[in-house]
Every structure is written in C-alpha cells, then in structure tokens.
Image 1 (tube, rainbow, N blue to C red):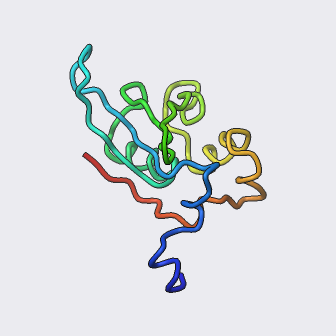
Image 2: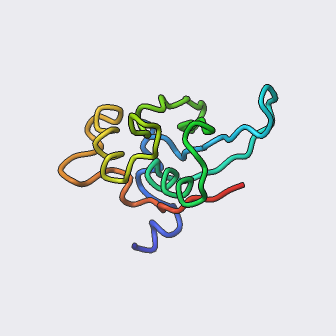
Length: 120
C-alpha cells in the first residue's frame, strides 16, 4: 500500500455508492433498545468475525453505514436457507446484484479494505 493510501485510507471508502462500514447489532434484552455493536469494513469480515465468536445470525441485524444514512440488510443476503453464515465466496455471489459493478470475476471493490471485525 502506498503512502497516500496509508494516510487517506482505502480508495473504496470514498465511493459513495458503497457503505463506509458495516454494523451488526445484537439485542441484549428482548423488547429493549439496548444492543451490542460489532463492526467491519466488509460484510465478509463481519460475518466471519461473528461466526468465530459464536454469534448466531438470528440474533443479529446488520446495517450498511453510509456517510449520512444507514440501511438494514435483508438477512437473506448473508445467511443460508438454514440460517447459518454464508462463506466469503458465497457472500461475494450473494452481493453481486446488491452492489452492481463492484463484484466481478473473483474481484471486488472492497479488496483494499481491512477485513477484520471488532466489538463490542
């Protein structure tokens, strides 16, 4: 990574058609607004992090975070039919239509980002 990218961050973070980051919210108490948040710059990084930490998809709501808005993702985009986390490859396939032109031929616009998750 060149010096400019180290200072300014990944180029894809400046693409307004893509989320800046992803947030997973895990409800702490049913019927309350209290939740733990988990973050990653990529959906694949977030799903892998949640899976490694034994957080089940049915307890999670994932949001795309844009500069001035957030958008709840449909769980069908990141889970299997039996409600398990999709693998990285499956996520790429699932999000092709969601991010038109950004995922093609085994490459995606998110490749320049950190794929680690964190939280809470």
